[in-house]
Length: 495
Image 1 (cartoon, rainbow, N blue to C red):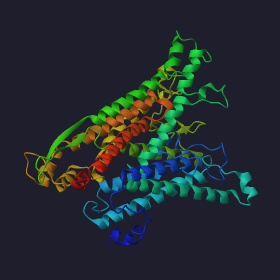
Image 2 (image 1 turned 135 degrees about the horizontal axis):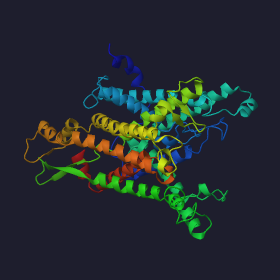
Image 3 (image 1 turned 120 degrees about the vertical axis):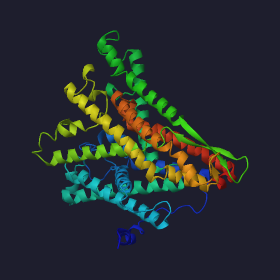
């Protein structure tokens, strides 16, 4: 008996969102997408009951922008469990250990979807329990526990139940968007979180504590500098003043990096090799299949960063629980950031202060240590980006073989070649594998560069890349949906 026969009774009974019976009108898709987005923002403001407010730390730290959710809210775990489960499935699928034919076997498709949900639930538990039951991350309000007649341990279980419910909610919200809305819920939540931080970084204005200069956004800061209510360190014409204008209060480098990433990603999305197609059944019907430079999209970057996040997550847990942790593993600052050892070298560079020792940054580290850390981060992102891009193309049926079948089944063919799947696959095989690796490595370089130079609102480079790319693809999907609404015959032709 195989594992499929053993697990089938459980996996086939996993709750799921019903698929639409037929075509969903564009306006209804837009409505479902907007409704889930509103629900997401609402849940990020529902705080966990029983947590001592203002005392915990966000264990995800700088990874929060790509893992969505909100620290201390019911969406504490964000999309982390979904991403981690995807990593496990991609590794197992890439090694062909699952033995599932998700392309042609309906039973295996159901098992795969059930297995994915089951793994997400497991990851919610494995992620949530250390957050709740390990001190310092979600501390219990002991006074509230006493007033309710509960022990601290009893209130911890109530907090964990809320975290678990939040993880399940975001799982099914993602499924609703995928089946009834536009795009995917994971992409939508990333856009929402990153956009919120970008807007805050631009226009934040502390009405309650106006004397706190550091909490002003870029636009209010420039107004205050122009009106003389705020001044640069040492004056504008001094070295310190210019440094403050570029790296500090003025944030010129962050503005430049953010704009540059927007332009580069949009340009890279438009760079493509277009393979001509013709319809064998409809004379004169022609089209093109685009093989984009970023063929696998930037979503595989989530998987690479999630691996780094889980490693840092493990480091903080070990440090908080193991008083005699060996020095070679590392030590942590009072803010919870690694400052030495293994966990320091494998920690991704998050902003200019992490490495610009020549401009007053570096956080007191030696130049050689900083360069090693940057080199490790760059290597992980380039190699990891290429590897996960390959896995992504394979598991999402974007490879030459699967794409050739889709083109052939739609009645299209490549002019000048035989009308069969193998001919189409052979042509696609000349482009897709190479472009997948190059695009994955390029996105890795851009993500590290954006982190090193800094962005508006302190958004991570990966988060900014994801937001721009997902928004661009969302725009393309919306344009395609509107086109299908206007011309129903095209919907029938392309399935």
